Image (cartoon, rainbow, N blue to C red; front, side, top):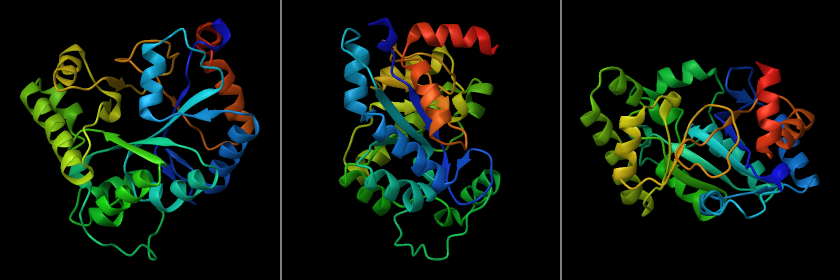
Length: 262
């Protein structure tokens, strides 16, 4: 049915008790998940999502994919317990160069703005703001977060700007290698850092074995696995989210809405 032919893909970065860009508070995140549960939405894992895109005749009514980018530790401290409480699943795209193999105590974590967290992430104190491999293992073993690739250094946009495609391939390869080493998995899903990509890097990703490539652009997801559209989630509650999900669950409504919106 044309009203349910698309799968909405939501894009989160942070869940923290702070006012910041790219963040939703734990209270509103829980309100969103509660709304999903009450209204009968099913959260997908990476295999289920890929299956639906490869089989477009299957009904996608009230199917949704939740995604998180980067691998910040607030995903472990705040998003993970709430997802687990509601028995929901999400993908977590990690940049492996920032993930450490340390045993970190998190009682002293201080929520801070996104830009400040990135500044620390690019320093020797990255373990203060990024998940560890043990935390990622825990979340995946519980069936909550499905860990996938965001490359290695988060510098792919810089490599593309300089047309350094050898560096892009190496970055993607290292991301795969680290996920295999620490989580014993071959990632098939890749979210482009900052949503930056072109045809050349897409071909590199496909050559390396990626089956699903995620953008930061809005839109419907019917069958195209190499230009997956995502909706950036706002720090708003269930009413905002329910409205967006009903639109992006339909390619027709998405097309109409995009014309009205712009």
